[in-house]
Length: 121
Image (cartoon, rainbow, N blue to C red; front, side, top):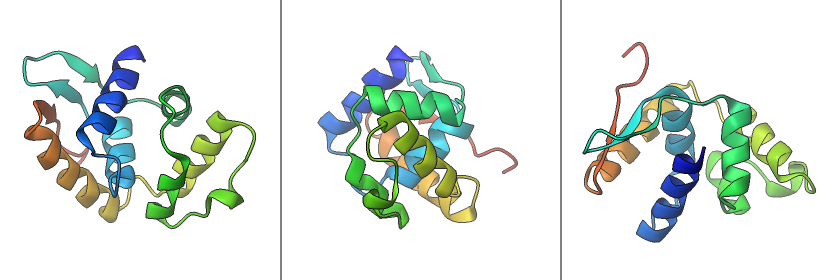
């Protein structure tokens, strides 16, 4: 989990927060993510684990607007529940999510990360 929190901090540092939420969710749930040196960051996580990681990393709550959600419609007090509901409503297995994941994978490749292929693709 700490590797994922560090990865999210790195994304913030690189400025890869805007317009990447759907692809990020898709990659972290269903794909393998590693550094180019072979260090595995994630082999896929559950929605609950990812919600905890987003909470711990203090991922910007307003990014849910990118996936068509209103932050005011999500649980306001419990940030882990907030992210869990957002993930559940994001359609992370859709064709749009696969495409968003592929776009983010290309961006990540330029920063020293490798993303495995989408399941079933």
